[in-house]
Amino acid sequence: MQKIPLLMAEEPENFDPESNPTLAMLQSLKYDDDEDPPETKADNYKVDGNYHFKYKRYQQAIIAYTEGIKQDCNDNELNAQLYNNRAAAHSYLGNSRSALNDSIEAKKLSPTYIKAYVRGATACTELGLYDEVVKWCDDESDNKKLKELKLKAVKNQKIDARNKRKQNQVLKKEEISIRNLMQAMKERGIILDGLKSYTDIDTMKLADIKALITPPDPMDSSAIPHLDEDMVIHWPMLFMYPEHRQTDFIRSANENYRFMDHLIVMFDNDEPLPWDKEKKYTLKRLEVYFEDKDTARLHLINLHQTLKEILIDKRFCVKHGVPSFILLAKGSTFKDYYLNK
Image (cartoon, rainbow, N blue to C red; front, top):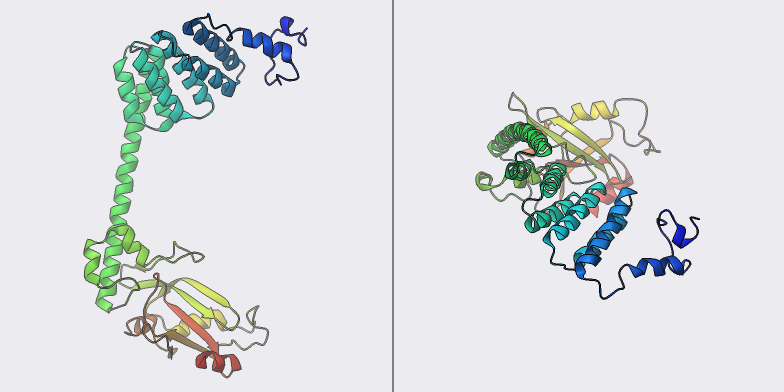
């Protein structure tokens, strides 16, 4: 009997009007009568929407309720029900903002419609708008469900306020730390790319200051310079090997350590680097250079110099908070080519 339109116990969830014209015709009879007033048509659509909602066909329910609203009938209570029911369907689909908007319309049409208040407060809860939840609940404070929603919202307000205080404390601590770091760089006379004068720091936002010292992708953007308790700056550092198009990224390098100290850790073993097939890049053959910020000329570094001694050189510029250096192999033909190109 489920295959016979007149005897169907329930309507198929998704049917093709062309393959089942009889059912399509029976459906249309409810809405095609031009003599029916808008109120009757709107109510029929509400019934259809409720039917779809019952069987959890929320998208089809929304379509039915929307058609009911389009009838523009003069029954405000009916229109409020259509909006509120559509809000419920939206809520089940996770469309909390649409659910809130429909609840607002339902409340406007019927200011005493409790279900609209409950639905609006629920939507605000789903959106995390706890101040708005309290407002919805205060308008009809005698309802049990609204009391529950308000109690939950007040609890969440306190949690949000506590989390916001913690976040502000973290941000304040971070700002103090970064501004102290910038003061230490200023005292050393370190040149930062993108900063004309350290006096500009006083009026810059924290985000803009961080942008000056934050490595770009694909480097680790969390590895930024920091100042320790002994007022020593620790820098991320980039070593580039142009001959093989390889790089080494050091997350934190003490400014008082010599270049030799870092290189010993990286190269003082019998195993060559995977890409160094000719075994040229050994500790004895390494030469480290930095690029002149004005002339682009490469300057050879004394490996017994500290990182700090290089960074205060007026020819050096730190870009994105990462001091960068070029490593070449002494006596290689590539070194001669690279330095003379």
